[in-house]
Image (cartoon, rainbow, N blue to C red; front, side):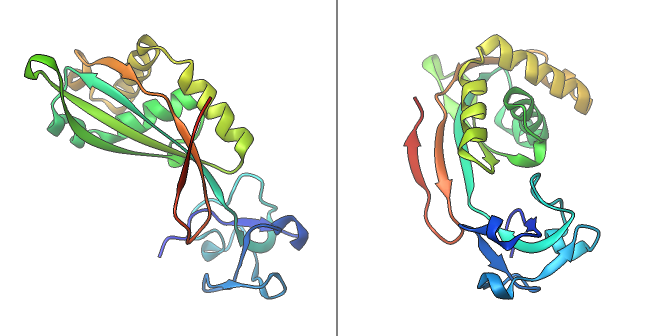
Length: 193
């Protein structure tokens, strides 16, 4: 089971509001939290620890703030978009100023006027704090369709698939929303201002 990002705090009080984790990723009280260092594979759940982690510390899983939104494109088939999801991930990460590992996307068929085929890309950006979520929301909200086109073009070139994206155009940049996500609880969406 993927528990998400692990944060290491040498001072347990910094983990207030987070779930303390045992060696086997069970939620425990803070006094029973496992202590480890980032050079131990399991410590950060076989990935990178959260950016505010100490090098060694007690293991916590802290609530995440998610920013979700959608982008609409034409000039690419659903199948080609599905085959190149990493391009959309990289473009969203670039637009939002976050690591690609913080971004997930889903691709949907979008039927437009006169039955022209397009795609809808729904993205989710996971950040640690409400301030980071506001930064991401501001970045994507201020992005024009031309900005998104440029990010897609750069990501496609970087991935070596620019031929698949040479006629792709952004037709809509949707308004992002944020939600606080606490492990084990449902998402609550809050419209961004």
